[in-house]
Image 1 (spheres, protein in one colour):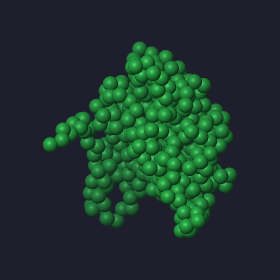
Image 2 (cartoon, protein in one colour):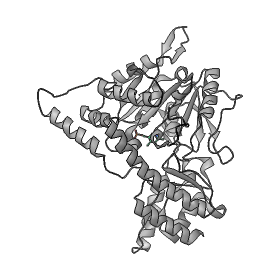
Image 3 (cartoon, rainbow, N blue to C red):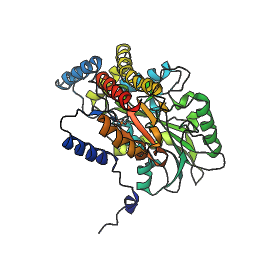
Image 4 (cartoon, protein in one colour):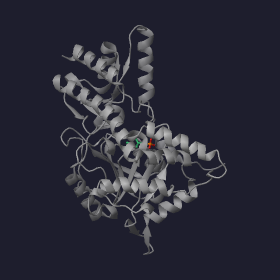
Length: 399
Ligand SMILES: *Cc1c(COP(=O)(O)O)cnc(C)c1O
């Protein structure tokens, strides 16, 4: 009998989305005539943009022809896509070598798989509330996790504490679930901490495309010195509606090296390359062609339009909450609005109140961590019409 990885027993069961479904189903059964509006969606809803669709069609035709057929591709991605990503970063003032870019099937898998490079003895620092993948993948390996409080006092943007040592730090900006975005100075402080503690920052930039202010950093590598202490994860899921299409990329700088216990200098870039070439066989040629189209001039224009649609929904929610005098975070450079539950209600209390009185569904903040209690996540991923209708219902019950 094999001895199992019993760290799995330490995982907390998350009932968040099944609990939501249960309550919504009960409500629908009791009120079959009420039209529910879902404002808790964490998935995109607009179809793929024309530039991507036409690239996908073209790639399928290539695959149908012996002369242009593609079998296994390079595990780290085709040059045409890595070159396109390199150009995209250069456009935001970050210069990367294509060898530092690794194309994958998702930021979620890469964020989870990156733990392969690190010993279980490392101390991991994770903000709370948080995207659950960071915590669970470390618990699966048996690593010690320290939580960092994100709260209203720090604008849900916790800063490093010089007295607490961590080896690995997870940061997500613009943040899911809070929508908060670190400024360049704040990221500079994190990079300084990481360099001082010889720590590695695992930076999740899945929502960088939602940043609409050039003074806010879209990449941790906008900070000088970050290439010596950070790995960045990004994805086309939210940028271009690829949640069901699957394509992402991870940047592991060549300057990111660490001294091994035998004194040898190890390159995390080489280690990740070795890990990927061993355990991963690359993203489909067809999908990589679709992904490259996102970075063409027309692709960038169309993806801005798509992101702009969700942002306008988020703005509508934010403006309504302002009008109602309800405090919130996010909603500007993010599809997420993190609102304080009105009248001191707890997260689930407000969930039930909103469902019963307005037939609107959101996500209770308590589901994202201890500091999420008393907060509620709304998203801009619904249609404009549904968002507008939901906001009318908010006004009717919360005025
Ligand atoms: C949606 C999301 C991702 C993207 O994951 P994919 O696997 O690329 O779809 C990554 N991080 C966060 C925080 C997200 O919300």
